[in-house]
Image (cartoon, rainbow, N blue to C red; front, side):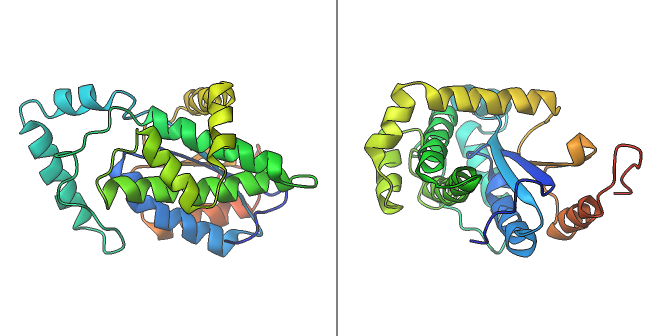
Length: 238
C-alpha cells in the first residue's frame, strides 16, 4: 500500500459497515484514492452501525419481500452491477451474522495493536490505518465471497492469523474494552458529521460529503477539490 500522508495533509474520512454490500463494492474506490493520492491526503477509516442488529434489520425491512430469500436475491442483483466483486450465492441463507458490531470491534482492536507497534511520530497511526484497511477487506471477503459468519470470534482469529497478526494481543484490546471505546468514538464522530449510512466519504470538515453508491470519478473530483485547499471563507464547488 502507498505510504500514508503526513499529519498536515487534508483528511478524507470514510465511514462504512462491513455487512453493507455498497461498502464492499466501494472498497476498490477507496483503495484507488489511497493509491493515487496517498502522499497528498490522509485517509481515516471509521465504522458506522447499519447492521448493528442484523437479524432485526433484515427481518423487518424484508418481511413482506421474501425475508432472507428476498434479501439474498437483492444482493445478487446488486453484485451483478460490479465486475470487481464476488458474491457467494448462499449469502444470508445458510449463515446469518447477528451483528456487524463484533467485527467492527475486532477491527478496532487490530488498529490499536498496530498503532502501538509503530515507531516514530505519526508512524503508529499510519501503521494502524494500513493494517485496518487490510483486515477490513479480509472481513468483507469472508462474508460476501465465502458466506462466513464474520460476527464469530473463530473467524476473527483465522483472519488475524492469515495476516500474521497476534490474536492474543488483539483479544487483549477487546477484553480491556479499549477497542469498544474506539468504536464508540467512531459512532460519535459519525453523529457529529451527520453520516446517513454506509458508505460515506466526508471531506473538507464536512463541506464535501458523498453517500452511497458513488462512482470513482466523482470521488476523485472531490478529492482534487479538497487538495485545492479551500478555506472556511471559500465554499467548495463540488
